[in-house]
Length: 435
Image 1 (tube, one colour):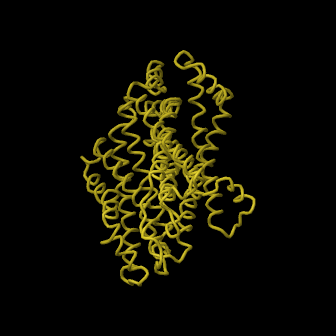
Image 2 (image 1 turned 120 degrees about the vertical axis):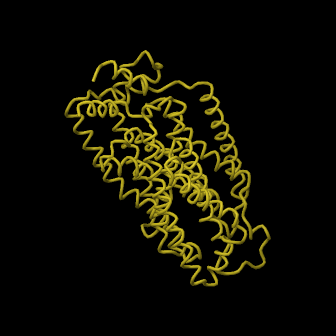
Image 3 (image 1 turned 45 degrees about the horizontal axis):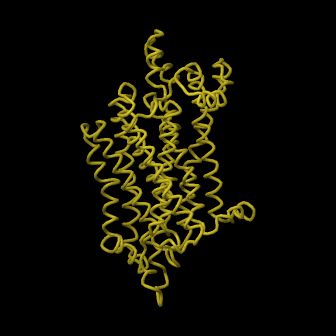
């Protein structure tokens, strides 16, 4: 491969400074984060009374956000691990995008749990007095494990690129150069280092798959180990995992389109990538649709009294509009778009991915709230507000601020590091030329 071609690939994939649109986007996200922080300060000072959560709906939009973040974080194992281990070379431009989405999502999944606590200063009790009999402890263990594995899977493949960034000192700021030196100055690209790094990535790729399945299975058990109608289901583990892979793949397609458009990466994130990811998204949407049918058809057939109120609330009652919106946007409409080859072009695929992400968030909201409003014991002698739940402005501000924070991490990462692996792209290009 000619030096000029290597130089061209490197310059195309080097981190780019924010333009006007990028600065406006970062400022917008910072404002949302600031509003969320102000709302959280207000919640800390006055207590959870500023939220709409009461005796019945003790989990609200915060836990919906937590389940959503945990779900979207599974994309790291789907793209980085599964496709890497199956030697799907076409996925190389997507691996780093998937991993940074995974890391940012799991970070805010952890933070939103602390937000949900009325007394975050007591968080340490979870570690001091935690009991392994509790599914919450299981969740803490698998989330922590998944976070560190995802972080390592992001860092190890980045090492060869850090060496490249250090060679382009004139194209980076002094502060960033020091950061690159701190993170990767020890990397010399020797055969021994390459071998150890490759082996480590393979081990992590294998390890993260059962951990990824565990994290969302255990999250589902937080619900399924109760007797509440709507949660008392043996289908919940598979139901959660299939939905997690779906929203994760949708998020990657959205990120692919945004980075391709704003960083002029058409040569690296091609129409073929959207076509392949579109096919994966159709498969995952059909799989998740199957588990949805299974989740609701069996209880509807038996129609126990406790289940009846819950199901009627979803299908025709108070939550019907949100329920059918979530089903259509997260599964049905994306399937109709992507099942056609023309629908797997970049723009239609982006729209389908965006619909999946939005619909999946509302789907998580429906998993949490309706069930809590249908307890076994009927509500008697309680204020009318206890019988309904709609998040307060503080809850909306904190939830939206956490979503903005996750997107801000992805945005800042793309400014500091190559969003597409430079070294791997050059290596694969050389191999294709030899063949």
